[in-house]
Length: 203
Ligand SMILES: N[C@@H](CCC(=O)N[C@@H](CS)C(=O)NCC(=O)O)C(=O)O
Image 1 (tube, helix red, strand yellow):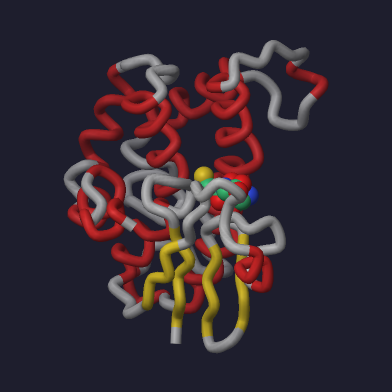
Image 2 (image 1 turned 180 degrees about the vertical axis):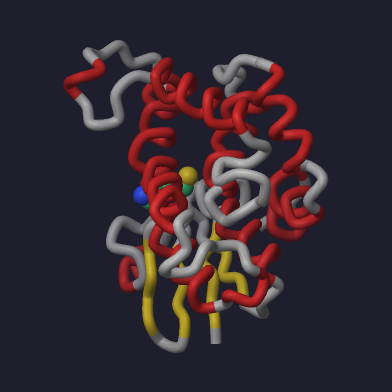
């Protein structure tokens, strides 16, 4: 039994997308993180900070997007969305999954908040360095790991999609637009990120 704790149009949307890519069956619990005092206190039993996403799989709680993605990809390998242990791409795969949360997300969030800071004062460094790294990578191959879409593309594409289309902070450079056009060919992306189900949005 797999339960997914989710708030539409939030950081949990990437996990929603990934669950749809995997084609596994799961139940959604919508968490009202936008209520006046945040999610209900009872939800702290699942997530220590009352944040989404979280999953509970066969009674085990897993939080943090990189951990959830790694866990799901390894538990449900049939779709081949993650290099297996022993595959040379496993190192870059883990690097991109962690980079997305440890660098891309906070660098983008700092930009959204209009922070000015010395890049060496924070572990995630500068927004410009992050963007240049992503752009360099995607100018060499269609996906972050090479020719094939993997789970590592999910947080990278999600951040670029939001950074470009929602916050207007990621520039419309051809490399980013072409990458997002490839991603938008994926039905699971369209139905979870571009147009989530209306009943979820109403919740
Ligand atoms: N490090 C967490 C971050 C999760 C996170 O920031 N979630 C936001 C959604 S955009 C949230 O639940 N915020 C509600 C709150 O802080 O009360 C992860 O990557 O899973």
